[in-house]
Image 1 (cartoon, helix red, strand yellow):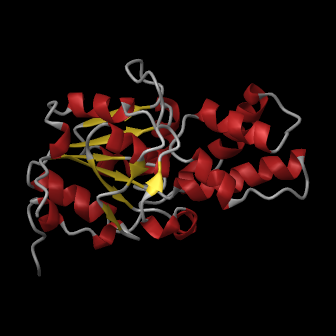
Image 2 (cartoon, one colour):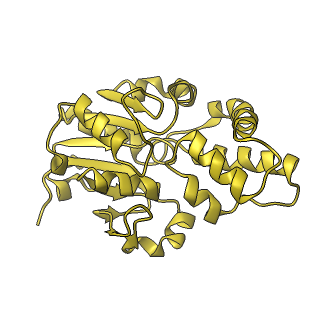
Length: 241
């Protein structure tokens, strides 16, 4: 049965932009300085994706027993990242889908765990594309009380684009915490994980939620946004040329 979608909400890091590469490289640089020989593994990275900066920092500092406070870790990591954000690029299939939805008057929103300041840095070279979104919600916005996997950010984004029924909303995510958040919000979700993430989460099959102990499952799993077929969600089809 076709799912009928009227509104779309997009995560940003690792979904619209290739910023996850920068997160990995910057984090490894911090580890090389603080705990030489320690690798930033995908097992650990998978626990951070989609979460707020403070939550992610707490996990890393505790998991690796770093000789830094959470604030010191965040400041060191932020300094390294700031020098690298300008190199991030738009991921495959993103621009064509965003322009397609905009052309057909489908409300679209960004819902990112990034702070507003980091959002501005990451999107500086891609302002024309991000100007197409009807709203942008960031992790440090005052109306987002909890980070993913809580549903707050998606519910806030939904309100900003007309507050449609949750079942009419389609979320695009690369992080499992984001999948959990979207499902908790009652929304459909397309999961587009890094291949390394997909291996950790059983190739996209049902996975137990870390929050509720319930089974969570994406609506659809794909390896790139370029593979997305809007017709499956009752959205306007791409025009074949």
